[in-house]
Amino acid sequence: MRQFQQEGLIYYKFDSFDDDALDHAIFSRKGGSSKGPYASLNLGGTNGDDPSAVLANHKKLFKVFGRPYSSRFDVWQVHGKTILFSEAPRPPERKHPPADGIFTDKPEVTLIMRFADCVPLLFHDPARKVVGIVHAGWQGTLLCIGAEAVSAIHQRYGSLASDLRVGLGPSICGKCYQVGQEVRQQFLKAWGAEADQFFATRGSGLYLDLWGANEYVLRQAGVQQIENSGFCSAENLDAWYSYRKEKGITGRFAVVIALK
Ligand SMILES: [Zn+2]
Image 1 (tube, helix red, strand yellow):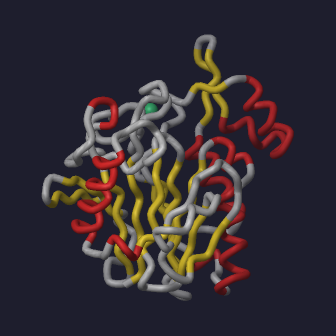
Image 2 (cartoon, helix red, strand yellow):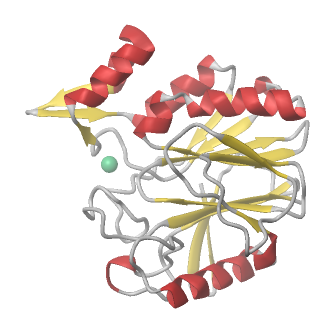
């Protein structure tokens, strides 16, 4: 990934994404107004942080991103597999609709999602001019939300999997993500024996490779161009929030994407 710094904010862009066609950024936790476990660029509004600091963080992020705050479209992320299409920014008075994938073909919309260990999947279809973000924790991964998104944008926009560029953003890696046997059992039930390649046993612990599992889901759906940031949220607490490593008391970093 490429790293940028502006007004104290540090953000990253995928090498494979075309800056002439879209704006995108994955903002690290640095440079914001939040304190304590939320320090400092926390964009999550329901995790116990001071709402005025969260609002200041949003405003600063959008200023650095170079698009109006009023252009945002965001959702209530619920670990499901619902994909929504945005035709316009979300009016501030309207509640966040529940969803874990958001897409748009409208340049006036800025898509934003929040993360702390779950895998951000950023999508660009240069042929149909569509962008999107998907939120894939273990539950979304189990539900193959990456493939769900590929299918949904094919139906909505005519996007072809072979045209898509997908980036996997910072999230918890397979060395750090310890899970219970019940998670493996659910994967085996849903995916069959193929699921076992994404689980590893070390000592008494069972670990799940969310990166590998999501790449597998995307490739099975026909996606060929995939870039993985390789940043582990749990191993880099100076840059990213980790729900697991920080035992649930932490912030959310932002992933932002928009068409030019
Ligand atoms: Zn790790």
